[in-house]
Length: 402
Image 1 (cartoon, helix red, strand yellow):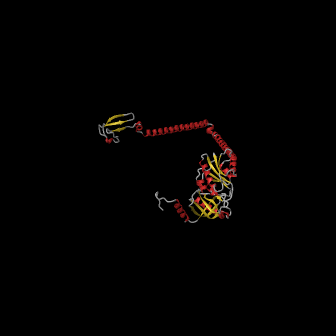
Image 2 (cartoon, rainbow, N blue to C red; image 1 turned 45 degrees about the vertical axis):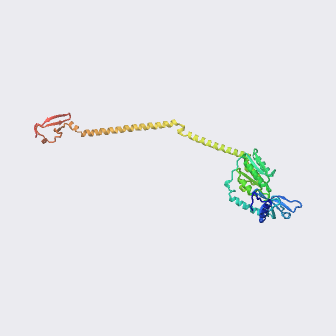
């Protein structure tokens, strides 16, 4: 089909082409959540909106009234259904609509199977990993609370929190906690609280209910919204046995709204008791340390070197004097011994000295070259000799050699 500014195509032609193309499409099975069910008296058809809770999208569906009236349980807002649809394009109004030929409520077993499949998918993405969970603040400046208006869950959280810590502040977002719009309202409330810089922790609370009532808290869009929150999120959905998927992605899961209040707000009485215990423990530790150091100081003062330092010096001085006296006596003894040795050696030297021989009257006769005369036959007449006696020297001349 060609067109140009000079040869435009009429609206009816375009509408018929679209209707012809859409009419060739087959019927398909679609799952969604029912909202805005309309049954007008006397009308052979009824209408409802089929919405996707994970994405903000919906389809307008029409079907024979008899088909809806025969459903058990009756079709109501919030119900999960599987619908056999065929798209239709109404050329008169230029409107696309979906015609339902079969509507089947999704049973609890099928719902649980789908939830388990979604849980496995999200777990594989790491949304439930423990290492991505954030720690809760010890004493939050303000607690964000997402819950139903004037609900028992709201009273449980607020009253128990203020009973534990009277000064706690709340930013409360009242939303629908069941039905077709619950998930989208909770998501919007979460984003508002997460954007508030004063809110340090967010509690999502709801009382117990059936599996169908708690379905919004297993909505994929809500789970991803909780995972993307910068603020720590605590969930308290239903009772202990209830486990919607949002509990797995939350930073902490409380079994009840009362338990959520205990998780996010410390008990002032318990904290004061803990402070008193710590103070008593510190006092005991300090007293014990002082007592131990006192005993140690007494023991140090009782040592002789500390108790009487001058007496110790006197003992050292006496020991030093004794050592000096022993050294003096030893030195004198050594000197006396050496003197005796010298006298003995001097006597030996004197006894062996040639001078002693001369002193007894002997003489040493030497020739001019210094040789000692031992034999007269060695001398010649008129030879000059040097004679040494005890008192000195004198010269002689050989008168006659014999």
